[in-house]
Length: 181
Image 1: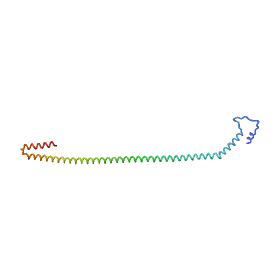
Image 2 (image 1 turned 90 degrees about the vertical axis):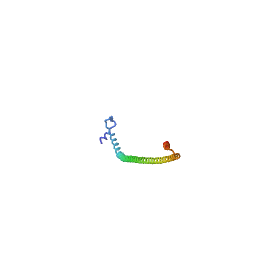
Image 3 (image 1 turned 180 degrees about the horizontal axis):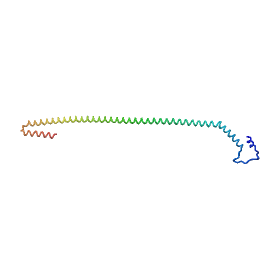
Image 4 (image 1 turned 180 degrees about the vertical axis):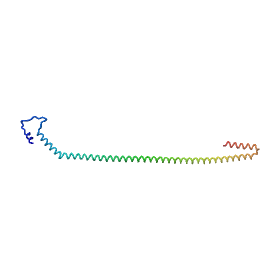
């Protein structure tokens, strides 16, 4: 230190020229003093604030990572629920489709059965009507045959004809019956 003080007290007359490699001890001394004060101030107030902000940032990042993991887990859970709901909806749609096909098949069978029954009833009614008409026609033919027989008999009775006349009369009668039918 003595050496430093002696350098500081050099006479002003002996001023040396300043070069980049020259050492100015006064400047070094004051630079060290200012650096020490600056380090002390930063150590006292700057460093704790810097550490506090770094720790807060670490905590914020950790919270964000935790929140992101929770959100990811929630998204995965919701995706799984969505898949399950979609699978359930597909299964319900298949059940509804199968049920609709079954109902349609039963309905088709019922309609076919009903149509067959109506067809059978219609055929039976037609048969009955045909039978009734046939009976009416037979009765009408019998009535006409009786009328014609009575007419032929009355003509036969009115005229006592020989067997040739009788034969002709029957042939005429048969011809008239043939013409009517």
